[in-house]
Every structure is written in structure tokens, then in C-alpha cells.
Image (cartoon, rainbow, N blue to C red):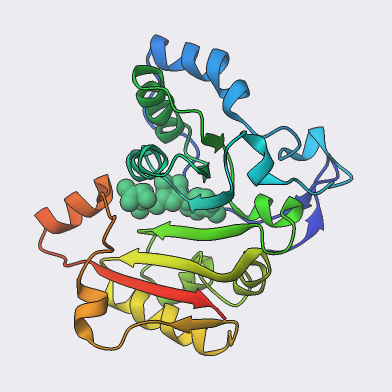
Length: 240
Ligand SMILES: C[S@@+](CC[C@H](N)C(=O)[O-])C[C@H]1O[C@@H](n2cnc3c(N)ncnc32)[C@H](O)[C@@H]1O
């Protein structure tokens, strides 16, 4: 993760091990991606549009938004859209490289439009290149891919390569939320965080990581984990 050698188009190369494509998209999903994704994307976030990596003021993307929140890996977008609906003064930027998930999110937005959502079909690490310092006041990493094998732990989103970037783009007092059903991922995150003094774990007792956040709408992956008997853990870190 984070290996920076140039790609053919000059963009920094980052290894990505997740899935970008799933089942064949239905015709309606394809047209949504063709017709709606561009309007919901952030101009300049894609490398080709902004190779000089000009910084982007995410808050200013939508009039009336006074802060920006980032969601890494929104899946089908259920949490992203619920948070955007409940918080009209926050601009919600969701990143998801899995095209089928993006298509689901676009379909939900089509049925119930929201002004304060932007969608990046791609790796959330691309945001690091163009986000100013202190750009986001909440960052959500909900059920990151677990990569259970030890030799794959380097692929986990939270780790020594992403944390300095997350610390830079998190505003003072910002909250970084990590939800996971994998106890080993909890250990992994807490260990990585010990080397990141910019973040403080807010938990004072087990209830703090067993109980969902007050405004938590749940996610599709979480519903599956619960149905399969894997209890969630909710970790909150504050940018000090
Ligand atoms: C286990 S799924 C969870 C999806 C959703 N958050 C939920 O809880 O239902 C993890 C998601 O993270 C996405 N993902 C993995 N690496 C990512 C990255 N570098 N940037 C953005 N999303 C990423 C995957 O494509 C996948 O959809």
C-alpha cells in the first residue's frame, strides 16, 4: 500500500488489492454511471483532470456546507447517504473503488436526491493528494476489508502509511471512526494508533467500543456480520 512509483499517465502508483468490478451491471446501472457520476464527482480529484494536484476546498463544493466529512469505502452508500441526509451543513465525500457499489449509491441518490454528497469512484488515498490540511472534521472507515492473513496485513487501510495522511487532513478535534467486526483488526488499529500521537482513542470503558455511535445508521456489511454472529466494535479517535 502507498508505493509511489509513477503510472503511465504520471499518477502516483498505489497498489490496490480490492475488487473494482463485480457482477455485470444492469442496463439501468450502466446508464446511471454514464449519466450521473460525473455531476456527483469532485472536479480535480481524478489525476487526469488535475495532474499538478491543485488543492481542493471540499467544504466550498456546496453552498451552505460549513464542514466536510470523508467516508472511505462506502459500499452501497447506505451510511454515506443517511449521514448526508441527517447533516445538511456537512459535505459528505464518499470514496469507493467498487463500481457495483457506486452504482447502488447512485441509484439510491436518484430515488432520493441530496445536494451535499460527492462520490469518488476510486481509492480514498487519492484524496490525500488534493486535500488541504485539516480538510475534514469527520472521517469514517466502516468495516474496512479485513485482510485476515498475516502476510496481507499491510493491505489494511488503517496503518502506518495512511495514518500520517489521515492526521494531516483531519481538522483539530475531528473524529476518526473505525467500525469492524474483526477482533484482530481492532488490535491492528490500536497498535497502529499507538504510533500516531496525533490521534487519541476516546474509549474509557468497554461500553464505548461496544455501543454504536449515537447517529449510527448501520451498514449493509454490519447487518451481515451481525447475522453471522460477529459483534461490531466501534472505535473513535480524536485528532488532538
Ligand atoms: C467490507 S466492505 C464494507 C463496505 C461498507 N462500508 C459497509 O460497511 O457496508 C469494504 C469496502 O471498502 C472498499 N475499499 C477498500 N479499499 C479502499 C480504498 N483504498 N479506498 C476506498 N475504499 C476502499 C472496498 O471496495 C469495499 O467496498
